[in-house]
Image 1 (spheres, rainbow, N blue to C red):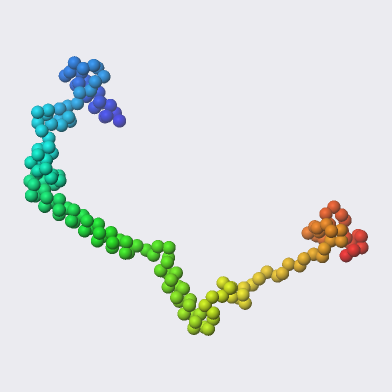
Image 2: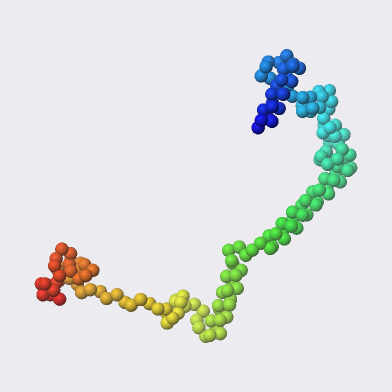
Length: 163
């Protein structure tokens, strides 16, 4: 950062000495501005010599040859390498794997004599289920029972003699 400040100060100091411009103006060295005013740019010269200038060479025949070679190679490489890249991409969404797995499952079910589709995803005989819940008897007062058997706000039913 300090080097940048020194360079800017040197440019400003050199500009003040060389020109009669205001103190804030900066004069850039002649090499940074480009060609002199009376010189023509090389691009314009090449375009006047060859109106179909592509920027590869000043000679018209060499320019066209180089342009065709670059575009042929670029398009060929893009098409060939692009198609190779797309061909070797992994299985998007595992569609091919799912198809192969489904075919394996169908063959296995046919071999065992099972139906192809079943309403149970898992074999119910192999599942361990929790014991069924025992519902408490309904309350004689029509009020839901608390977890321990007493209705809300009332003493235990055993006190009232209705167990």
